[in-house]
Image (cartoon, helix red, strand yellow):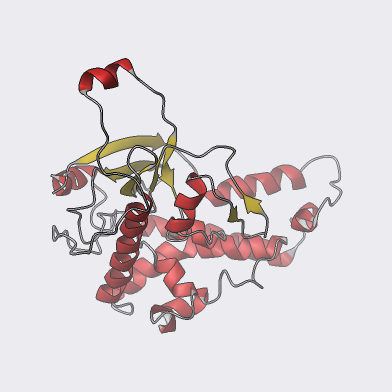
Length: 313
């Protein structure tokens, strides 16, 4: 298999919900009555007396507990089949970077980039409203303006030198496929709950809309694991979505790769979460795109990172 560079980025973290919930607790339990400052926080002061919010919070707590049952579940067989794909021509530039070793040593330069980037193909990003594709991400890194889901433009003050989209390998692209009602996958029973999740009219900023997205984030993995395990959700159909999203991710990297000007890498994130919600993020970054796996190795192939190393070898 193609030589792989391994980047280790360790983060002992709590869930996104815990962070948001803590913010609500701090604001709602203050001795000073909080004055509503925006639609987004207009009901935060009354969160302890809001029966719907209390019920939603209990449901989310239960779902977070249920996610522990998904830890260590092996859904997919480890495979080493290579991806057969057509090479995508880069936008511009020469594939050969000139200069001898001695010249490089004398002309050392600091380069700036990002090797941990999520798009709409990551279940958590999509659950919280991310719409950007890998192509959008690379355009943004090159200095182009892209739209925030709220409608305003986002743009860097100066372009980056290198970049890698590293979406979560676990159920890569599945949340997006379930929500997008134009896909075949969205027609199954599992997807009904998520249909239209990021539709233009579904971007409410009130507290209940936020809880709904937290419920989606918390429930997606355990629901998918449960239904694949039980056979309600077809394992091969799921793998088909994952492989398609991975192929598209590689195409985007190839399309924007401009050696000597803007370097991109085919990459993804392998996250081996522990039972107590500790996350160890490993970004798997490929040197080239000529020999790549048909699907990324995820925690649903194995939660043991040593199995990842063996697969890479």
